[in-house]
Length: 171
Image (cartoon, rainbow, N blue to C red):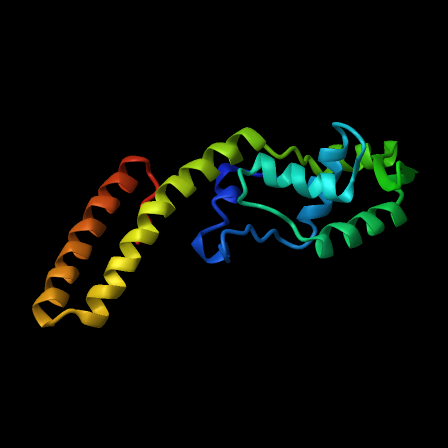
C-alpha cells in the first residue's frame, strides 16, 4: 500500500525542495493522477492545476511529466480519452479504479494542504533569516560571525526541544 502522508507534502525532506516544487518518486504521479480522475474526468492542464491548487502551490507537475504519464495510463487501459471542446479529456476506467484499489493509493489532500501551508509559513521567515545570515557572513567581522554562531547554536537547541516534544528528533 502506498500511503501519502503530510511529510510527502513537506517534500520528503528539505532536499526534495527545488524552487518550491515537489519531487515525486517515479511511478507516484500515475497513481495520483488515477486517484484524481476518480473524482471526475479532466484534461491534462486541469490535472496540473488541480494538483497545484490542492497543494497551495507546492506541487505543480510539469506538462512533461503529466502528459506522458497520461499516455502510458491510456496504453495500460487505466484511462480513456476523448476530444471535448478541443481538449483531450481523460476518464478513469474500471481497470484503473481496480488498480488504485490494489495499490491502496488515496492521497490525503487535506493533510498535504495543512503541511504545505505550515511549510510555507516557516519558509518565509527562514528565507529572510538566510538573507541576513549571508549578509553577516559576507560583510561581518569576526565578532559578528562569533555572535551569529552562538545565535544559530541556541536556535538549534530550541528547535531540537520542539522536535523532541513531538517525538521526531533527528540530529
